[in-house]
Image (cartoon, rainbow over all chains, first blue to last red; front, top):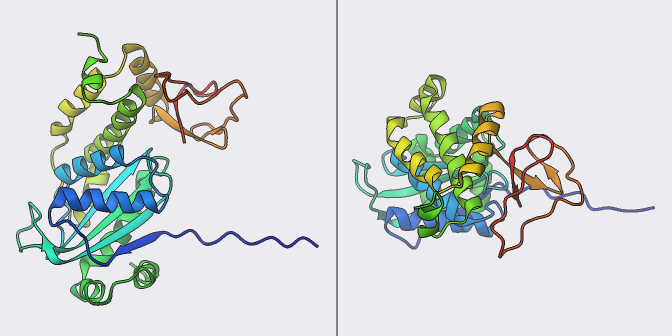
Length: 154
Length: 125
């Protein structure tokens, strides 16, 4: 009898407890680098570029102290949601209510349809829509909590 | 000045430039589609005008050799995407298994390969 190990459930999220950078571009690079280390991004340069461009076209500061950014690119191998927390806060142009403490990066491969991509983006945005959710991530964010929150109905 | 001069100045090889062009085209499509615009607004995003992306696209397109740009644009018009990644020797655009003679261009080569099934430009993963 041959016993084979079942494939692990793909790891679809990452939580960064304390972002090193305090500036927007530095934070974006840090998030993309984390996704690269997680195996979701083939090469960082084109993803960083499209993330920056998308942030210019669709400013991500949609909640009081949090931002959502996204990218769909051929340089992305699989979907991933990366959430970064900054205790000190990030200077974010376009954020009217002071520094940003939570940044959500939503990544999807280019093969995904826009509908599927927006579905994932909706889940990413749901993480920070309510203050209660944001507080949960700011106070006790972890990989496990993020995975649980992503599974909760949007 | 040749068409690929600006890309060379930016330190990008033709494949990287095409990859960025493909991403910009996808973003343009998303921003110009009223249905997607309304979805994004619903999520709380302030949707900017896509006009600002056109000069960026033009700059990237100027960095690609005219021959490859023609192939890319033809495939984009026909299928919606001009590039496709290769996974396990399969083109993810049309799911054709590539012949064994098709190979990844070497690191020192600036070569670009196309799929024999759909003619999309291949990005080797």
